[in-house]
Length: 149
Image 1 (cartoon, rainbow, N blue to C red):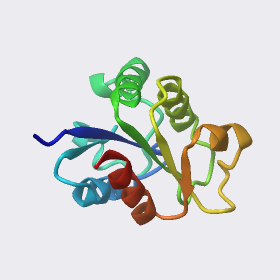
Image 2: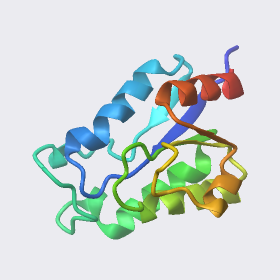
Image 3: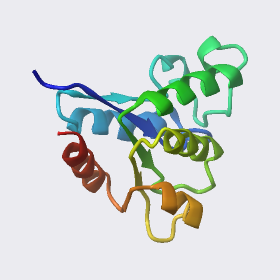
Image 4: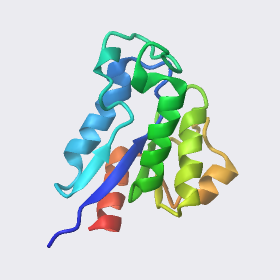
């Protein structure tokens, strides 16, 4: 019997378009093995499709209030088998993503971070809790498959 695994797809959302927040996540989900499920923090949020720049939170959408975002993202980051963090091209520090890293680390969940050498997220504490820091999503996917399969 084959085991099933979950990977939480962390990364900046605020300020991005819906496509900018979902495209890479959709591509990773497609590239994972059939028994590895990708959890996107954007799942169930198609109502943000027309947003050119996603806001921090939305009081008018029950899944996107500040409390709802923290509740589900913390749950996902603390129950996944691997946390995949995509910081590629980040223009400002993603506080929410850094919190997700801390939640996963508290549970000793393996963390795979993708970022360029000059990325704004380079910080000694973040790098110490990240088991793997690579520069491409393809490298990250291969690491995840190696860890889980």
